[in-house]
Length: 454
Image (cartoon, rainbow, N blue to C red; front, side):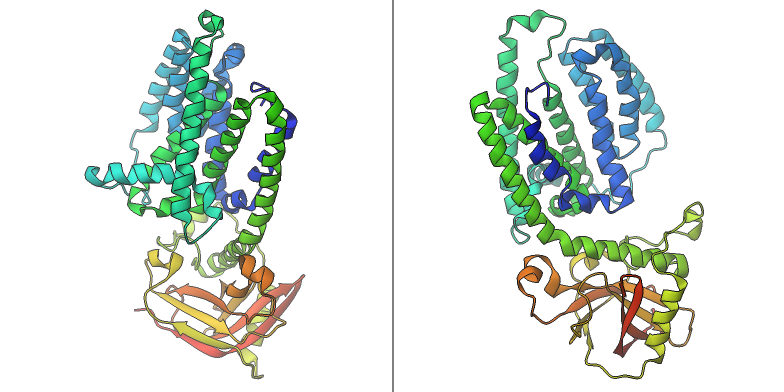
């Protein structure tokens, strides 16, 4: 900001975007928060110490570069990007030291290296097309907030615009710098921190597009990469601010601040239910795994890890034993009749359940009473033949999501979920469970579910 002579007012749109629900979708999960966010943060910090004005303390770039590589595989891109930047500054000695030490570190880093199970690279013939498409779409995927139906097309268009703007402004800036009399000085820096940080993000986009090439265009829509999308937009905003003349910059800053504020409100409405559901799924699985050894919502495309994997971890307790026992007792022993209907959905798995390695029992719940909340609600499943078995399944409410929930207050509630075939065989009594403050509430469901694993 300071190097681009921007006022503190330019921080307003950046703050709105960085702390929006769009970014929160990444930080709900500790793994993606650690991997993606810290990969970007450590890389940017390493580049910060590579600036000409930080030559006296430039050695600090090494620990932050190493930390970047230890978060996410795309963090490795800080090595070629950092070396390239030092070379453009004609810091030959520093380039030799950085390159030599990083090569030695890379030998250690890649010894016995294996790609994760999520990495599926297409054959070379298909790879170039897939990576090129995903690279452009990923660069503009922040625009997917505008529409779920046309998210990929909008992201492709926005990505093309962002890339054209970046390379145009960057090339013009470099040409201008080379025409300055100071280009022969030791402090000459043809590529600034902002531009090289943008290149670092594009390196991440490239690596993710290659590693997830078999996912097709779904990589553009994945919320786990949202922090990259936000950072690309933020750097684009700063880049545009820096290219605009001072007399117009104030007007532009005000306009972007208003636009980012309105987009933040829009995202709060759009993603509120999704965030609440994700949090509920994590809370439910914290109980399910600690008590039953299964995840019903997390990593449905993978087998559940052995309990020894978590021997040094402690799962947080969101529902105490008294709450669980009250829910279980009322579900099993209820005698009252109600109108709630559970209907099993037949056909192929939908949405996120398509990647499940286990058969999925999908269902909808209708005729839900008005006193039952639309968010943070669970389907309690009590095995009638094994009283110790009790599971929680987070429920999504279709009538409360996004703008539909904002303007459709009187519509019929419908809830839905899917259950992987991981539960013990048995006949399960059901109930809608939630907390009213700290008070456990439950409304039993008449239907039972019989589960038999093949």
